[in-house]
Amino acid sequence: MKQKAALKTLVLGNILMALLLTACGSSPPARFYALTPMPPQISEDKTILHDKNKIIAIGPIEIPEYLDRAEIVTRAKENQLMISEFDLWGGSIKTEISRVLIENIGSLLDRDGLAVVAWKTTMPESYRVPVILYRFDAVQDGSLTLRAQWAVFDKDGKSLLSFQEAIVTKPAKGSGYDVLVALMSEALGDLSKAIAENLRFIKNNLVIKKF
View: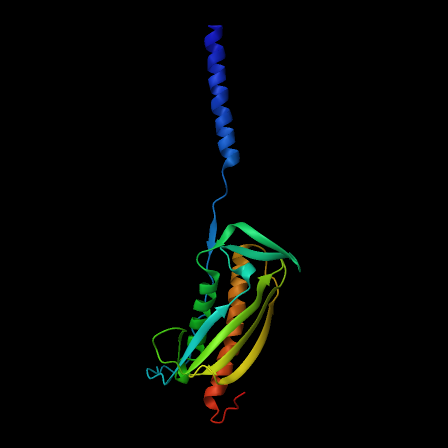
């Protein structure tokens, strides 16, 4: 009887130990995020322009190498990066940025007779707009900074019509990666407005100084 009791105690102890090890070894579930475009631009004028007489090709999009990864990157300090373990992008961050910029700029220029597409499409583009993001991150529980440059080239790809830079800062609105991603989407909205205004100016001026 004592041997059976001891064996039973040993078996139960092994089961409990295995359960404890399993619990300790399990990881929290991963969370996935996507950037969101600006709300649709609503106008009282219900007229819809179907004839787009100029095509804007956005791209290529370049981002810092440290951001080009599945994990969301923040800064603990100005020169110290923090890489999330369980908070990840649902797709390529570069593709996400490109998608949101194209959708935003397309919405902003919808009534200007301008169609906005991704570069390297089969459409004959009128202007090409490459964009470089030198910084696009936030200090943990602090402000977000986006610094970008873009150029506008004529359809030949050689005539530079404009070269601009924008710095966007957004104060923190709370903590958590969901708040951060929403803030990043807002910053891309501000960048989109600056690029759209630049393109509108070029389109509306008959005489354009070429660099």
